[in-house]
Length: 169
Ligand code: FEO
Image (cartoon, protein in one colour):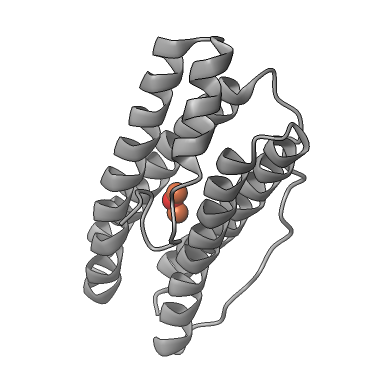
């Protein structure tokens, strides 16, 4: 593997594990606040991000590259409200989309064709991840701090039953 491309993919591996850790901290916060549905959703999301990291980890090894794991930053553990948790999640997904786009562009410039093919999965995944987060945030913005509606949202989030997709299917 080209060293520039390898380094950039290692940075992305770190970013995916960082995302996993962030979501896990959000899950802990929500569960502590007794929003068990949101906590469950966020735990699934944390696992999904771990899988994203592992997908690139496995790809680097399959290409005979050296995986270089870096330290993961301490995640934020406290939020103003449940709505704020998901607003931050959306903002984070938007940043990850930018990272993936930049990584794809770098691979394009380096003519790293196998890496471009691998990253296409991530480009598609980010469209889905942003869409789901945007829909959740839109609902929270609509209901604001109405307690009954917030509890309904928590219940709805709790219906997510897999880490392979953000929605409950
Ligand atoms: Fe791995 Fe949420 O992007």
